Amino acid sequence: MIISEMAQLTKISEYTLRYYEKKELITVSRDARGRRNYDENDIEWIRFIQRLKETGMPLRDIKKYSDLRAEGDQTIPERRVMLETHRLFVVAEQQKWTQNLCNLDAKIEYYATMPLTTDQTKF
Image: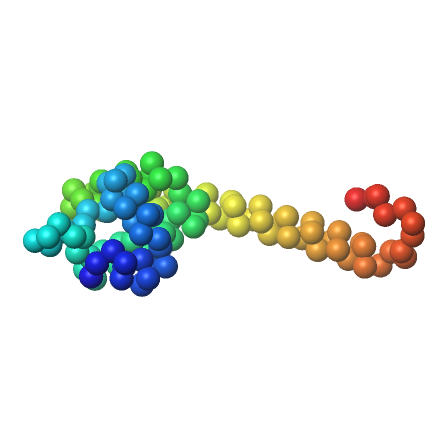
């Protein structure tokens, strides 16, 4: 499939797909006319990259993971360690966001129970 179809399917812009290719996060085959030709494996790989980004993995780490993936199955242990390490980061972020949400809920509850006054400058 061509880049516009991949962009529509993955909901990732053509610009971003080109950027991923430029940064060597993805390698895309080309047809006889030089157009990008994405396949099913590319779809899953691009979606995985997007999930890593959404969980806060830096592009340099995604690039390292991508390079290891390109080297083959012998790098699976190293890739697993990378994912396990990143998982610890995600759990810590999740705990931080949970605490932040609790703080927001407490403040909202506080405001909900206080009478309205002319001085609304208290946080």
